[in-house]
Amino acid sequence: MRRFNTYCGLALAVIFWGSSFVATKIVLRELNPATIITVRFGMGVLVLTIASYRKGFRPIRREALPRLALLGFLGITFHAWLQATGLKTVAATVTAWVVATIPVFVALLGWIILGERLALLRVVGIVSAALGAVTVVSGGDLRALLSGQVGTVGDILIGISALNWAFFTVFSKHVLKTEAHHR
Image 1 (cartoon, rainbow, N blue to C red):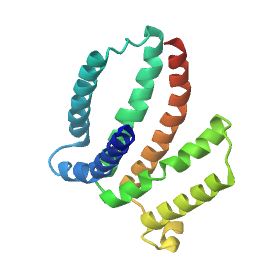
Image 2 (image 1 turned 135 degrees about the vertical axis):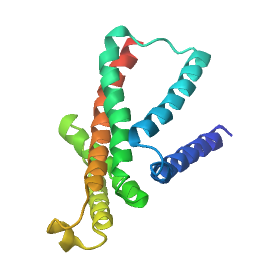
Image 3 (image 1 turned 90 degrees about the horizontal axis):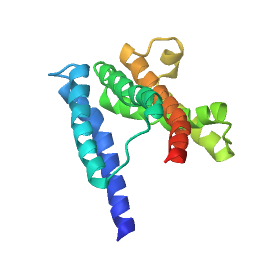
Image 4 (image 1 turned 90 degrees about the vertical axis):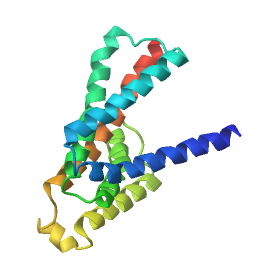
């Protein structure tokens, strides 16, 4: 039963994550990206604060606050702003496909920064994902992409958001390991 609940929770997370692009695109008709992010994260902070107190989590060490604040800004606030602003000119489906390249960037940055191994299967996955993203962004017209005729500011912002999230993921590995050691 526990495994079933875990899979249900993971499925719900994917559904909420996947639908967030469409929901953000719809809400952008009425609100600007900063307002959307403020409301979204305000609700999240409230829920997580209540959950933290109920579960009895210990406070964060004062020395860790600057690093965690920087990670929070880069991985949460800046990332969400890039996506919401990019969604103003990009279709939600294109955004979802470009954001799906995040594991590619994480694997590459993990290899470059952390010295993690890149097995053959990972390399095949990286190449496949990159080709898929390029095909989606170019609408299947690779010549137009190569000549610079494809792409909007939104496409660039969404691409930066994917790379930003990968940096957040790689750097948070180190910070969270350090914090876990101090707990």
